[in-house]
Length: 270
Image (cartoon, rainbow, N blue to C red; front, side):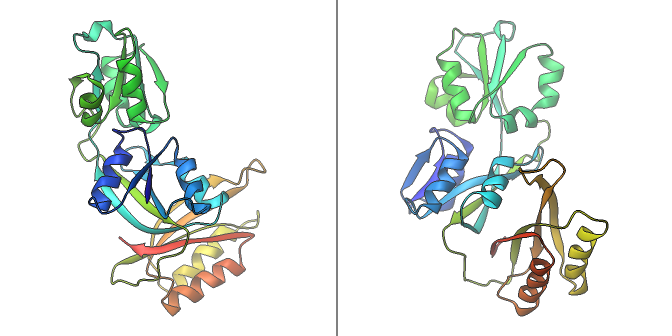
């Protein structure tokens, strides 16, 4: 079973359908967190969740759950092209719209359009784009949603502005989450970790230097709050290579030894 964040019509469902190619039962969950927790408790085998968008950056809920909630691993990834669409009940004119609702990622991906065409209109965040479409369908016609085209068909809405992303290169990276790590090694793998260091000068530089010493290419780094103390951060790093490679394994082991908190998130093809 493959979990995804619902309801029906979300980009997460699209990603799940593409990745599974119909070969796996899809199970809907109300949130990213609940899908990941279902994997951790072994209620389902795996889930697919968004982790990063090319326009609006990382998905904080996914990062925080991977770092601080449960014991799961990234075992794969899937890239989905994203097209946001402004939709409302049939017959709605632009001037009728009083509120625009969607997932925060979608609102961020369309921020230029919202500022230029709907300045002063109320913006509201929802748990998913599909839920926004459902709410628009249940409204009096003054509510519009940013959602996938599939949601318009599913909930009987009219698309007022198609493909209204700020940029045409709007893509979201989804990751596959499982209870056990991926043990397959390919020629094109990456490894993900999260760690924190002592709060003193040079500690992060030293940790990154351990990877540099082994000539390991770092693909990404970003920080998230550690939750328990203001000003304390965890650092998420993606590197090229598989932890099954001795050079990668021992380099990560050195980072672990120099960290106050360390978690291996998985090696997987990309």
